[in-house]
Image 1: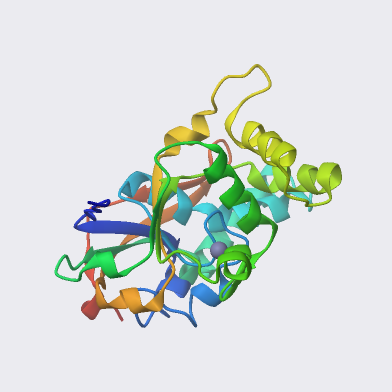
Image 2: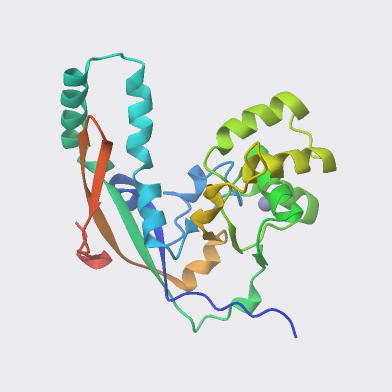
Length: 250
Ligand SMILES: [Zn+2]
């Protein structure tokens, strides 16, 4: 009896080149996990089976730059020049997708696995508690249950979650109660008209939280995007199928 989890052969993680080259292992505590704070499922390595989704994650680093740039109120020409210069000079910020290979010979039964089959109260509460505060070796489940799961499979919360967290703090002073969890679940999954948000269509994420899992995860290699700025479309990235094996990375 029990639940059997069959992991995919490969999973993908979107990041930028400068961060990826610092990975010494799949679950690199010093290069990744220590900086992974207040995430949906706690501090960990977040992956997906959907390469297109990981490409979207990877290009986020530029979107952040764009937001900061908005404040400068440059005209279109200055804006184009700024971005193209910035992108050229900041090659290390190039979006990349890291591919990990999963070794099926490692017995996953020895690990604590948590699967959220879809949106539900427990999923919302888990995300809420980790969004309020979580970092490596410090989260709500460690305090309450003495343990954070090693592997978590479940839906991603909607992308607008940082705004939701600001509203949550105002309304509930970050207190987790049945009422506040229900409010939070509505906020991350529904529009005001009660429609389910497209964000949930972004699909499943698989997250790994225990460095012991390096025994089954191998850094396989990466895909690198070509990125430029276009004033109508904003940051544009194109992804080729060229795959660089991890060992050949300089
Ligand atoms: Zn936790």
